Image (cartoon, rainbow, N blue to C red; front, side):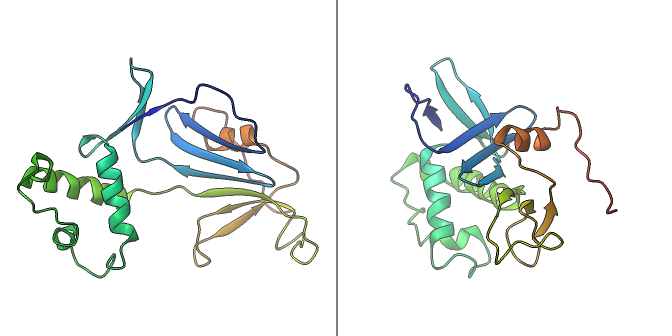
Length: 185
């Protein structure tokens, strides 16, 4: 899939950064929050000036593939069937009239979808929370990092001060100097 970089800078209080190095991550910054997730694709800028996305499983990631994957996970049937093959009838993917809907396409899509579903999303959120009803220096410090989404998995790392987006990028960049968590006093 190719995406053209915007030609003009857009002024907003929110920011989206795509960082591609030994990591491929998106960073969303808005207000007092910075959220980062892993991108499960290899990303590069082609000679055409567009950003291209490739999957280890199948090569080029097309808009059709991403739309199909999104349709499946958005479907009310998602998670109720045992295999991606169960979705073939639902999305009419067995139609022989299209070259893209061949047996090979279905095998490739199955590999792509499986890899996509098994990829760690690497969710991390920096939060500055000054709500007096929530803030507690021991349990919910003003500055903290939440790791993972769900209540059953998440944990909070308290910080002694504020972070900006560049700080969070540095923490997650394996090519930068290591950051340390000190044991409690």
